[in-house]
Image 1: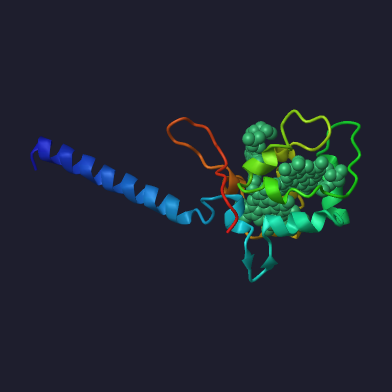
Image 2: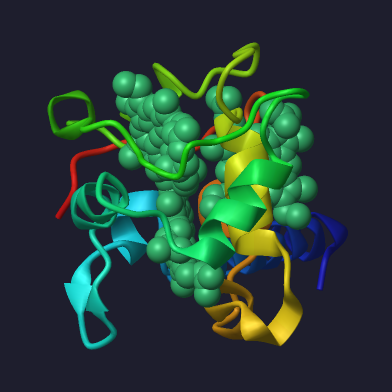
Length: 155
Ligand code: HEC
Ligand code: HEC
Ligand code: HEC
């Protein structure tokens, strides 16, 4: 084989490999839309966030309250009742972020809240047990290196 043909064959093979790797990667992402792709009505019950949050307006279960309290700003004691936010969560998590800001002095930041809820407790945590990971929410933007969380309407 002459050298030119060898080089272009290698380049082509490389491109095919890179293309199939990219396809495998996107095929493996079960939750490209983050929150709203998991929190659906399905075999495990109704996990839609509108439904979960409506439940929290009546009572926050003790285990969830304990985790959330740990994420609260210093000196804040959570009441154990969520306000009615139905009108504010047309897009999730952007709607949540209107209140749960990084700088809030009165309620937990959404990052801390989401991390303690999903990433702690080992196998007792259904999210971790079912293979949930950082990338279930954070999607790497290969152009910028940022890891934004897609936001969208509930399904
Ligand atoms: C890969 C699937 C998945 C993704 C993505 C996901 N969640 Fe969850 N979420 C779960 C599971 C499973 C649980 C239950 C965890 C446990 O066992 O305590 C949960 C628990 C919660 C809870 C607590 C519910 C309760 O009753 O204890 C809230 C609130 C929540 N998620 C909000 C969100 C938000 C907001 C996002 C996006 C920023 C998100 N989740 C992304 C699967 C997911
Ligand atoms: C209107 C502002 C507002 C919006 C929007 C909002 N929250 Fe909250 N959230 C609060 C307040 C206030 C508390 C503290 C309630 C308390 O003291 O128990 C709270 C507390 C929580 C807690 C801890 C449990 C509790 O109720 O104390 C979770 C979990 C939570 N929010 C999840 C979410 C998620 C997920 C979204 C978006 C789907 C969201 N919140 C949208 C204001 C808001
Ligand atoms: C259930 C969804 C979810 C999972 C899983 C998750 N995060 Fe996050 N993360 C968030 C949210 C929501 C924010 C806040 C985004 C914002 O404020 O714009 C955040 C913010 C961050 C930030 C920015 C700094 C901060 O604390 O605000 C870092 C760094 C981060 N996450 C790292 C991680 C790592 C590492 C993992 C895995 C160990 C992880 N996250 C898993 C939802 C998640």
